[in-house]
Length: 480
Image (cartoon, rainbow, N blue to C red):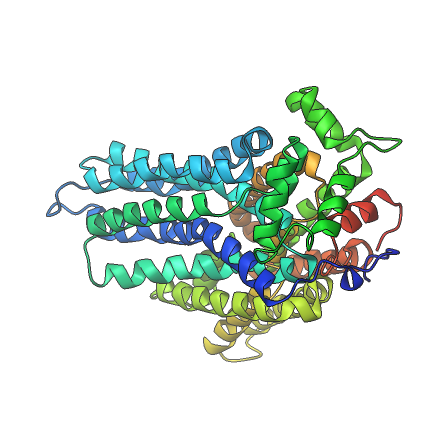
């Protein structure tokens, strides 16, 4: 159900036309170069390991344990960078964080190019992961703060498409060049990205929060299609008003001038506008990971009969994810996040249950084995999830939290998602051993169904709503 408000964003003066759409799209595309690098970084280790893993003919080789560390460190340091960015971006600014993050990424790709030992290889992946984590959290905040409600969902969904561009780019380069040359190309990409990010304006909300109203007005003019100040006056005054003190809370400006610090930000989570979206996003992340098979796809496809060439099937599923993210980008504005969430989670719940039924009937010899059945079901789960529930929690990060805690809340959610992912990966084998594969599927289907019920009652429609309208919704006691 949509968020109710006396002022519909569709009737506001904030719709500036094609030039505004172009300006905001340019800004979001530029900062989504961070997501392109993330896609590149995810795939690069597999290319490096193909050449170096227990290969005596290469310049140096790495063992199984070293390979495990090499792959894992990218994700561990990504979480650390995200948490650090969440605490610093309020002081440094969204744009500055995205620029600063290029330094560790730059060092990481250079180290990969120069690496001649497993230690340097691991250090390179650690630096790249930290840099991407540090910049990605600022990217979420930036996207939510610079875009109009009519464009926010569609532009925020570019993240999934950008990741797939990065993945595809590495696969293309891998067919033409050695992985050291790919690392060098990545360095060139970072230099170009740094130059492009330096050309886009800082978030007007962050500038207003720091008392830089003149710069905020110029930034808003740029983001609304290089307009004159008089054209953006209504929206600019609304942004300033949003940061003024109310009866029950201080303004963002006052809070930052008083230097509340990290503990003051943490204390803000006692407010409904902070803890309610936090609970929503955490539950969304849990349900999303389970209903889309994210942590345990490889184990499942091996267990259902794809023991030969499982990596080939994973490539197919990844392509389907990319196609799904494109469908999401094209439909999110007209269908809304709430409808897409309920639709895709209901589809995935049904598909997971069907997979459990297939495995159960197969074990009792009610049907003959047909690899195409589980392949079709898992492919459909990947595609359906990418059309909604897989990416939407990351889109929500850019809009559901109030400015005063947006940075730390986004970093916290990213850190929690990493912990959830680790717990699911570590517990899956134990769960499957205790329940068997078919009942594990029934359990996942049940959890997804519970998620559907929760989202039906507690997930508001945030599409085409201003950040202030969304914040007011969570401050109220209504469910939807």
